[in-house]
Length: 115
Image (cartoon, rainbow, N blue to C red; front, side):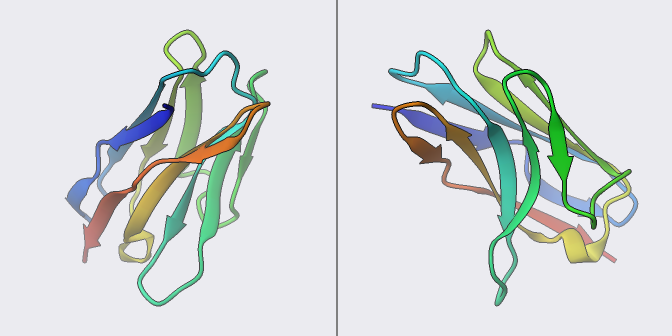
């Protein structure tokens, strides 16, 4: 059974930083893209950042210059360094992993940014 487990969320003041981690476990032999998306209350899901197995990255315009995605292929882990956080970044953040067999998603971690 494949699992993605996020960690690192929490409450932070505006201007602060958080680093999210997401570790994949189970029968995964290779992972293509990994990434993060968010769902804010009352809004649709939004892609935040993605990274390919080769390290190419893609970001939502709203986080460019503030967030950085990275991954450790050996550890099957993806990270999201979030700096200069804003109240509008408040949401549940989910990681995902695309494999040749299937696509997987974590259960999410809450990020709350106070003003």
